[in-house]
Length: 473
Image: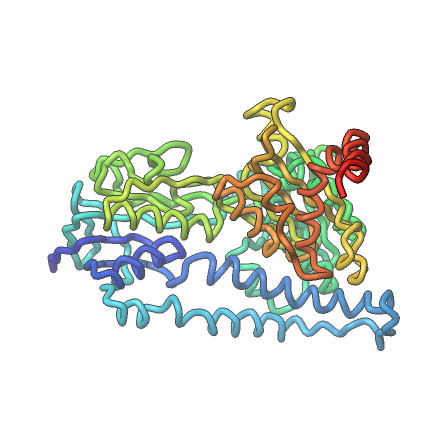
């Protein structure tokens, strides 16, 4: 077995692992990377890229069908060539793949080994052909779809997010088990492309969202034709005659295709973490705020170290790890300054505290909650958008600590709030901003300004203005 020494050894070639490998190598560190599957991980191959591609195609089809509302008469219902959509997804992945490729990373100076790796000591990682002695190691193995233990599921064909994009024909009726981000995003995409869609959820859809935003998304998707079966425990799944039937305690739901979207879990089997002195907790590797494991020379980043499994979180983890490893800067990860977006139409984006979490943390009497309906925004009026709102959460002194936006381009608009929360700015900072007119960003300014409206337009202010013009020239 060949033995080599390196500064940093990374296990996992997804978003988190590639971020730290490229950054560290370009700054002069000697880096070894192990990835046993496809470079780019879930985001490139099964997640962000293919899902947003199909969402884009579905939105185009939807806009064509509703164009009559803007005095543009459609020729007819758009013809959907799902084989071409599938090919477009593959082409999109291939366009981005070179950025995550073995060739690019080797050009950056990273030694890439497409092999399964495991710990063979507190400072050693090995594969079948190679043993690597490291000064630091980073675990970034990501996650895989979690398959629930449902009677009959193993006897019927089903898809996960890792296989759904391989479909060559449009499902007649897609039944989705799971109402999280993946479930609702793909539900809207497929119904806009022409499928019937049902969502079965044991709790409520988008369980971590505040009630009013959850309700708004449910209403929007219901209007488009999606059927919801919430608070539904599945008792059994059966199949036959090109049909899949799901039996819940309440009713029978039948469809042509089944998508399991009940979450993701880490596959740590075979890593032999105990040999490195690493401990796990609730299916994740336990780390401190610096992303260090129990073994201070080993870091864990990305999906393996958090339940907030977003690509930008993985990148933020990598940044924290690099600062600690390369520069010995005691950087700590702060989840409250990392936004996340659910790519329904309209999008829902959130950063910092939600209203529910802020009330739990500080008490309802110690926070300010401002709601601005997107329908009051002039850009929304020109776009014929009536659904959506902006919610700003602040402390009593006006410091912004959270924002949730349900609106077109919410994932872009949220960045203004992310900046304000990161730098501990007050609502007054947002109120002083000047946005292009008309733009959705103006709704942020209007919401922040409303915090001061009561004082600015109060009887006391009118009295002061009256005497100001009487006494002063």
